[in-house]
Length: 294
Length: 88
Image (tube, rainbow over all chains, first blue to last red; front, side, top):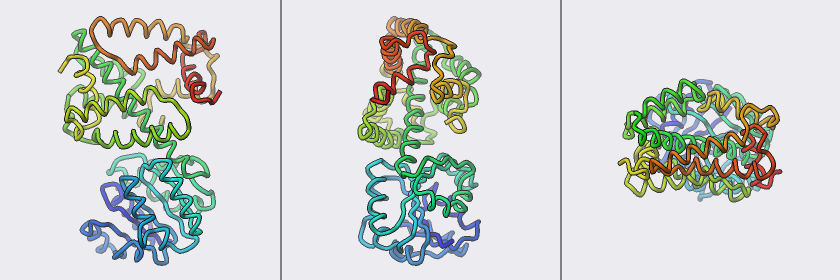
């Protein structure tokens, strides 16, 4: 297929390489031009602008961190909506808010293009090896056409439905549960510490019991026990960004989420105390602060 | 969730009950859940540890019991959440 890829950051780079490995005709674009150098060596076309990238493309994949970035790329002058041919598909692969997905869907439809929302689950190493989880949603015909590309990027594909916003709902709900799990784990550690028990005992109870086998508990719990919050996977500020999208989605759909509200307040407290750049496990530190332990 | 970050018995078991809405197959009742959370909150109060997530769960258990679901499996907080969201 003739594929375009915009956003060659830590995740996007690996995903774009996977597309190339499937011998597709790939054009890439990134505002940071040095990110495109390795792709030129491998025979990808390096587009000079989004408009240039869109020429003759059947599918364009965007992997951009923020709603504002994907809005700029899609709606800006010479952006995707103005430049993609009719019939083309835009695969939006970041974690975006419901309002953004709805606006993209409408604008692409008006330009006779199709939006697929395909948020991903996984880290950069999984992106590089095609082991991501993918959550596609959008018109079935477009999903069918893109399936060869999805299979190159992801090991496990969870089909969310025919409306793009359904994929956002799944991704945001998964992140909400993760945030609540981190928050609740922090509460557990503070409670046992105030009763004179070492945190690692609770860690063993959790990860050898009801929460055994769950990377969320094994990974974040370990960071909490070791207080190694400066080894950053996903920082508190990214949690905050996602949390605002979750609260927005909950508001639009009228879903009270009290556990998630607790998570937001802990995120805010951590940022207020200067811990915004630490790993999200630092919410346990914020909890211990609230418990008079720090 | 259960093929990703949450591949653990707690999520597989309680998640399945919620998806199937099989709250009548009772492992542990909402009433017992409330009893335990009252103990947890009392221990937390004695040690001066605020537990906001614990409070949120205790409130959902209390509401589930108020709606007559006290003898259902305590995964019934999933239904209580649906009720609070206008889904029931």
